[in-house]
Image 1 (cartoon, helix red, strand yellow):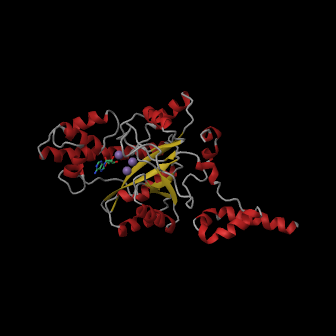
Image 2 (tube, rainbow, N blue to C red):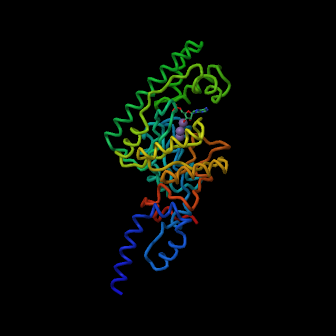
Image 3 (cartoon, protein in one colour):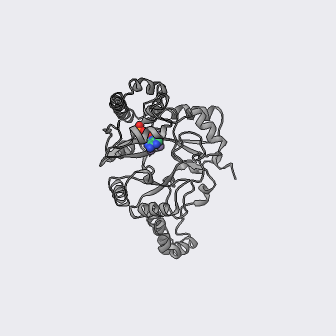
Length: 339
Ligand code: AMP
Ligand code: MN
Ligand code: MN
Ligand code: MN
């Protein structure tokens, strides 16, 4: 009897540490897991605790190129009944404290995850790495972000010099006024080009001037993926490969990207999006599993529109390990108020 108790304790410890391994292979281990759970040797990841939560782990505010202020974003998240919201502005964490203070002062039952979306360069591609669960007071991390913001400004100037040569002077100042104190992005330059009448819509600014190999494209000098992962880990966060299906690359390159991201110590990847085709979802999930990454999902909300909304259709399949599977906030009572 006593020996059996020892065996149970041993199995429990061993299996908990192998949790991720098992979860990724539920099909193979299904019966085994059921038996062990029956004999109380193994407690699988408690799906029921998070299944009712509405979770969105990728969003923007006016601190980068989003249309809503951090406070407006929290208000919208509340309207959309989002329980857990990561604010992940491009290369800045400036909006997070404001959002948290507002949620707290208004007693809003929402958990704001401190996030960021770091711009990196990889073989000529702009790859975005989301960081989740960061210590935003970390001074080294703040200094590192300042370095990125300097490159943002320098690239914007290079782009605008090219635009001057294309016959559109003064775009830099106009874009700065659109940024309104936030760090400058190509979205602000696109808005300036619309105002100047160079294009009708911001989207056209990318296809005519700002996109890769277009007239006013200036190659950015972002940090490497390796550095981004290190910055995020040093600040206590988890590194997530953002929107893998949005990079204009072949499946072969995408496989290479995911494998390299994982080998460099990346933790998770976004595997779903409201408008994603089923076969793309399958492909991303396969890449995630092959590379032993966890799963994440976010709307990449920039502004309210027909196509993007906070927290909409972002459910992760039951068979994956969510990036938040061990976050204690997922067990906090106020977040479970909704049915
Ligand atoms: P940046 O970080 O300054 O290079 O700007 C990238 C941002 O511009 C992305 O996060 C999108 O919000 C937006 N963007 C990039 N490519 C396009 C595109 N083709 N059409 C519209 N917006 C885009
Ligand atoms: Mn953006
Ligand atoms: Mn992005
Ligand atoms: Mn984004």
